[in-house]
Length: 255
Image 1 (spheres, helix red, strand yellow):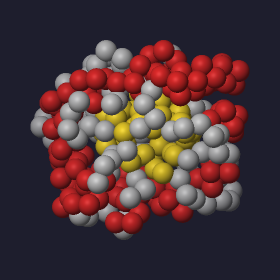
Image 2: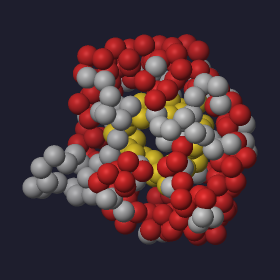
Image 3: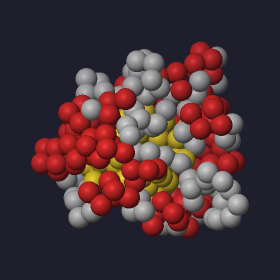
Image 4: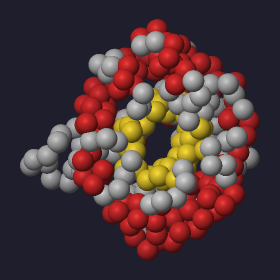
């Protein structure tokens, strides 16, 4: 079974409303005219941009919009939270879950991620579940254990049918926003391990179907080498997603 090729741009807390619409208005026609329609491009702007950008991508081929996070609750007295169903109603099709910055700065756990994934799936969103190790965990040789635990805690409660609607992103924390990038071989090793975990905990069909993205200082210069690896199905892009030319070139690199 072929896997979806994906390049996702996480804008994080950047771009005010007008700047965000301007950036999206540049990216969308560039991706549409230059990139293969076989690659899914997903924009993850701040919440306040979602509805407007969703309107811009409506009817476009293989260009989508997602939320950077969602609540683990359906509704209620949770000031400042945004539910998965709210994201869906605003035009989102995807949502990031478990990003390392949510884990690091807000104390979110993989168990929290499991609750958010359940909310996302119930609302009809595709969760992009992020896993990855810190520099100390990498140097200490613990990274496989850490990532396996994150996968277990975040995904093990799902059925095979639910896993068909989940994307995984491997983001070594030491490579996010640092300019450091895992070598294609290092990234491939972890992606293969993740695919093996899916095979062992679900089935070969789930392992073969699930798209696994690499994130961590992906840019136009290193994207082709990363995407050429057998188990790397695309990228979760940070800083380079804030430049229309760079992001489009990364999408084009995923052939």
